[in-house]
Length: 126
Image (cartoon, rainbow, N blue to C red):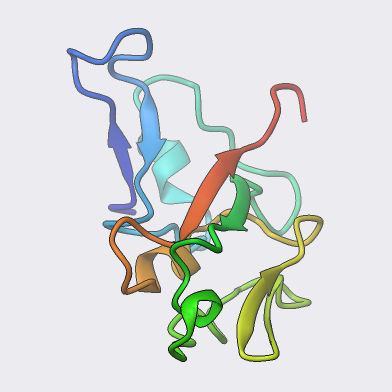
């Protein structure tokens, strides 16, 4: 439940709104989504299905170690998606955007700073 933070007061617009910072703590999709229940404002809705889709992870190839030469694999095997949205092909991570739930576990595991994986928000209304 400690994965959700609020934006600082100096951040405008959006001050005080919930935000996921996967570099420091990814969403582990806790059973019952206690973050939604704990949120004082009704901005986090408990999903109707078994998972909560937060965004889509994207590989930044210019920062990802396997695309630059050395092997890594720190992000491999972490994806909680039923079909494993992150797979390794030729020792390089590949993300299936249709299956990624945006939990950020791969981002949290990345040893590169800034992370070689970024979380892109879903479009509004999706």
